[in-house]
Image (cartoon, rainbow, N blue to C red; front, side, top):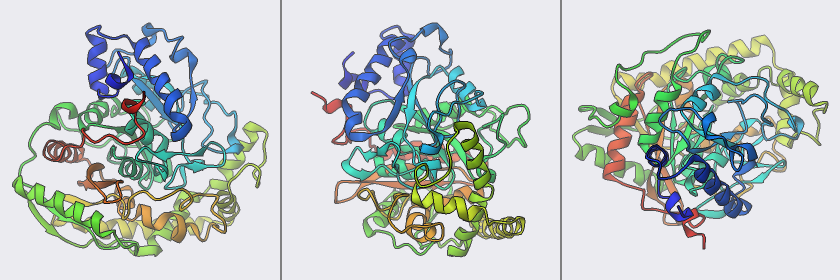
Length: 483
């Protein structure tokens, strides 16, 4: 198999070739490694590869799930694998190694995926762009020097460029969906607690963070969800699941739904007119399919809510970094932390239990206000991000002058305006590459549904994938373009 042919398959397609013995897992690993060697100098999407999972791969060690032999990347964040480095994109954590397999890692392995390396992420995943002093800046495959988004930007760039068909991502405020939007891929955030990340953590980010994958097709997202949504012993709670597998459900028609288009500035950020038009075009397509569509505002409480969420995200952050420092023997400071994160480290030390409880109450009120949307609508349709990818530097944690106080306005507000509500509500949401800007960059359109209605999101996503296909669009930085 040639690289150009390899890059035409999604994950299930490659797994089918393996099952039919038309290609071996070792051959696929070698192709992924060749793609990394060729494209990574420009993309900077991959920060480490594992020789024992490439040239030294023992196929007998792979699980026998539906993705057996498919090359895969783990994000440099939660989702730990015992004995592998996990550095959180931070010089403070240089050389740190996972001590146990997470439940997520165990289930990914059982699915048959061959995790052959780590993808890039910004420091502690606290940025909407994947740019770091430790590993450099990750490009969108659509334009070198433009942000791949964050924090799962390395994963999204690698998938969109054809390096691997699927890669791990995590999402605390949009970190799967934002990079999917800016790289032209599919990024699905499941419902709260749909995917366990035990045993060391109950719910990352106090329930805001979820794990899943970056993909190129909706069917890959649905099938992988079946593999990793198994409740684990000790999980704090279990949410309802449909009787049928998501791999089957996503192909079914959901029935007539009430779709609300949300375009009002939830955090004060103006939406690019071309982005807004892309959302309305998707709404028109859904209306043509028989759904009821109207434009309706949503309310989240503006920047006061975002300020409360910042306190929740960073309560205990100093203690967390001090624990990492104890493991690595390094000290938090300007040589080990990026400027914005160092400022947050000191600010977090001032947060009190009263601050946390006040922020929790504010977030609760915002969640209940936002959730009034579901009283009149079944589906949320909005931009994923208010604007398309921008050049490096705009959201960098080392951007001059950015402190803990300035992170909200300068680094978070615009990218997370339409994604954060679904972390707050715990609702399933997906970004689809349904349009392209006149400047050549992809536009992500976001669909969401009430909690536990993951299948509804996947069903609508599949329908739009058929009606507004994107598979024929290939970015300039792509495996198929290698000579």
